[in-house]
Image 1 (cartoon, rainbow, N blue to C red):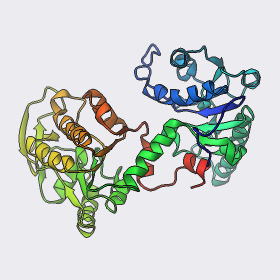
Image 2: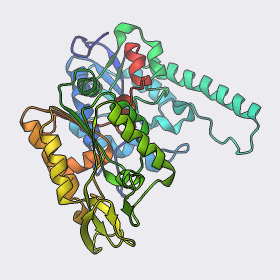
Image 3: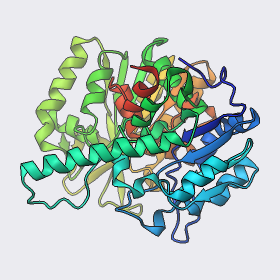
Image 4: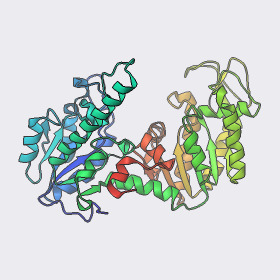
Length: 420
């Protein structure tokens, strides 16, 4: 498989799929440019080799052409970070995109308009009525798949080499993330630095594990993490369950959880996961105390109570001090650490203590030689908020893509390049 370090882009036009789906405020100012900065090394490599770049991305979830989702809003920031004026094409499939791509010279860059302005990017029919027949639905899907293939073919025609640096969309079989690769031979399609780093980080955790291996899984629902938990139970030494889904496990074990968030239809599932952990000799670590509140507010009254003794009218919004110590002891003794999901409502400062404690324990373990991978929007927000992102071994830019990769799924964006 071709690699970016071994490839010379001299005289080559590269179509680079990036993930510049960055947050904007109501005046269209970028509030976090992490994803843009993460792709800059790949773009600069191509330009410094004497190549030219055609940059393609989506932004948001538009339903057709919507100006608020235009990539023109981020054009200035890309130009600033690259240190050159980046050209812009108002339509990724229009004549302007064709002509500007053809006219690109070495050292120049072009940003295409939002790929998702076209339904063909995602391969999903738009405007299909809810009461459409099975035949109509099937025909619409078939037509859109054909449109998707045609879109990928046109995008590919702009360039000589395809570079995928969009790990955040690697789990999507979209025109620009997977299908486009079919129009390039094996020597002219490759991963960018960011994409390769993401793959290496996950595979280091899952395939080249140094033990003990501890995974910390947070989040509000067991149901949203069931596949990743089941996969991890065959790989980890310790699994820390935390966040809102703690209370489903606590209730399943007979504890009182007051008004805490719970999935009552997943109590049997929680018990089965506990048994699976035992069968696999995995140390399943649950909270022993909670920081309970009398309402969902930063200013609510609070008290620390045993995890299974939350009073009626109160809800657990974070872990307690004894749990902080318990989690930290496991984390600091680990050599490989995966963190996905905070311990509580970290957005409220009064309930950020548990997540801060976990983050600091991971940082300490990393300082002592452990490999730590942090992924998922909330966990990334935590390490940034607490000022410890730089002490993690790797902070992933992927959300859903990271989770599916850890679940063991084959991601279309990765398969399209390396075949598996």
